[in-house]
Amino acid sequence: MKLNFTLIILMSVLLSACGWEGGGFKPARNYYSWNYPDGWKLSANEWADKLIEGIKACNLDFMHVSSKSGKNMLCFEKRGWYLEGGPVCENELMWNDPDCIKWRKKHSKPDAVPWKPKRN
Image (tube, rainbow, N blue to C red):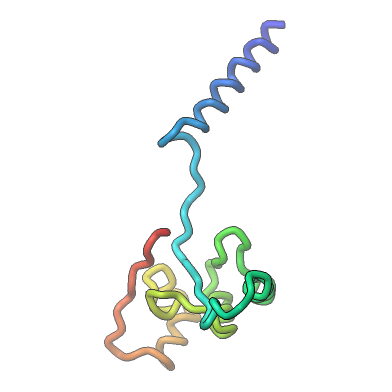
């Protein structure tokens, strides 16, 4: 009986702590905000279908639409999606990725500087 009472108290404190305004548990914000060229011309369903299709084809994380692999991020970019800050391989988070280094040798200017992603 004491154990049940203790568990109930513990769970209620835990749940209330996660729900405090301005505190508690918050998931990390996305670093990336992907855009699609002329996306405003598409219906919401068409846009969502293109997004889901690209995420599946490029093996990206559904929650953050990102990956630790530059190859996967470049795949998504090749499908027409882009970041406002610039190419994904010129982003400071992907700067040292081996696939991005190869990509920059072919496509970037020699004096390219990594850009910082903005948190949404």
